[in-house]
Image 1 (tube, one colour):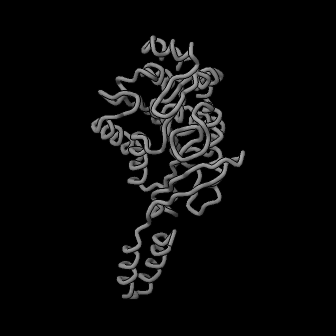
Image 2 (tube, rainbow, N blue to C red):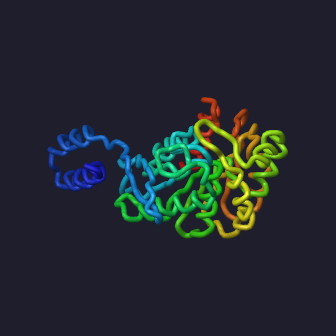
Image 3 (cartoon, rainbow, N blue to C red):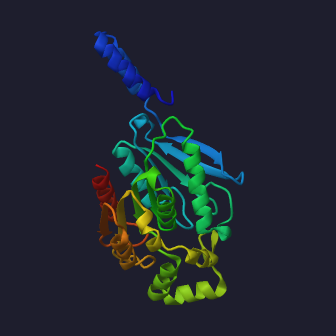
Length: 287
């Protein structure tokens, strides 16, 4: 049943060529079997569990595939991920979203152990798994929010021939800029976070080590390696990743690119209006 729409489409085309009236019955049967999203568990290179969600399987065989990664202390349920998932599926993509390890989703690991490197490893594990699936196509699209934005930027720079479209949303541009933006915009909070080494968020402990480790990363130094068409999205009221940092990355990218600022929105796009605005920007880029 997994690829019924794809199979039905091919059979219907052949039946139309043969002038078989039964095609109407087959079309009805195909419509009854809409393809629901699939939940999948895989293992990464360290044999740790990763939780995936595959949507848009009705588009399998159309040659359009995307992976979306959430940000720090988050999950695939984050508004940015869900908005992006809808924009991609509405534009004919098979989409994989997943919970990175050391986050607030269903995958394994403690948030205290989160690092940009673990996000990168998880993204690579998901790509490797996808390559064995019938719906996989290459080059594909990548999207990521915040720390996930840094992860997809690094992947696109390391494997430029694999990525055709790249959508970093309020991405961490560099570890140094991440720390500076935090200190500039939320000085009391960030100084305390750095001094104590952690802060409590919901049920998790967020380590400052994730910022320190990210200081070896700088997307500006990777920009000339990225060959994909890029949509960079920032938020007007983002106090975590200042718009000026994202604009600096946009200016450094040599290829086809777009830069969009979502008005009256913070880093997490919590309002319905900001999510609708984000959807419109994404859908316009994907058409």
